Picture 1: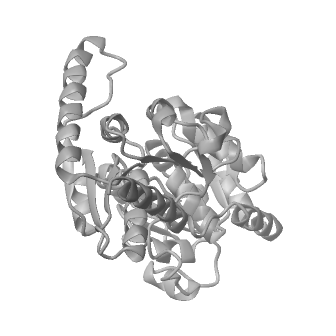
Picture 2: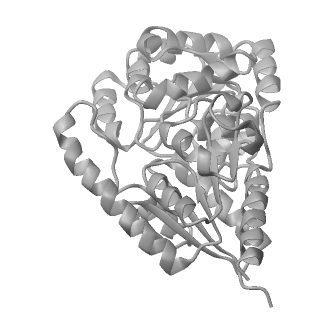
Length: 375
């Protein structure tokens, strides 16, 4: 009887890293129900709650990023990196993984670095069109690099690259909603065009300011809006709407639990340009206006957005110009049936429906080969 597979999945920090990580783990479990999967994340980050909620054990490392504004604080960061490497080594030696997967985020660096030093096969999942520093450093020792965009040989050895796309959160397609029922869930009317604005679970300041500055335009437009503010901004926005009046064609919430309903209701989506969000939009064929966050490493969200714009698969507004231009552009686009149809057709061409399964297949292949070699 073969020894069951043992896999470590490392990374996190944002939902954009955690959703793909859990999707990969679920796809591995589908192939090998008896596989042991352990997550390694960063202490105090979102994965420490989200991963156990998805049914998987997780260990945390005291890792954090460098402070580029206050260089003296990085003495403590260097100590945390050293401590995280030591802890990662102990985790790997105790768990004895047959393969280690890195999905991005602080914890993936020391975990994959130690695994590579121990001769354990590693797979990197690079979500963005512009590779992050950690993944570029890990690429030399990685066995396989799964990417979501063409042209990634700019960053990685060509022979290691596999174009798989990004896994998305489970249930978006399995639980696709009827549009009229979805609109009813938000208290909106079935016969009107609908724009969905999402800024991630924490929210996006510029997107929220764009809405607040254009409330009168929205009220008189005849277009309905579903507005996810994010938890951080919600209370302040509610107060503003009490003072200025909330348009009847505007549904406001801090968080949308059933994203499949929100997507089904929307004719057009306004979103940041994180890799996970873009992958969902591609899979669902949703016309989108992308407003890349300027507060990310290497400005990778702008590069993600432009990769779609070049294929006429999305519209794009710079963060600095959003308050002035975003809502007028969205209102113009959502009323243009031909434009919506073209955007939908073009973005759907970029979708990878089986990304998690393809990545899981590679992980299981690497782990199986390692298991046979270690007999």
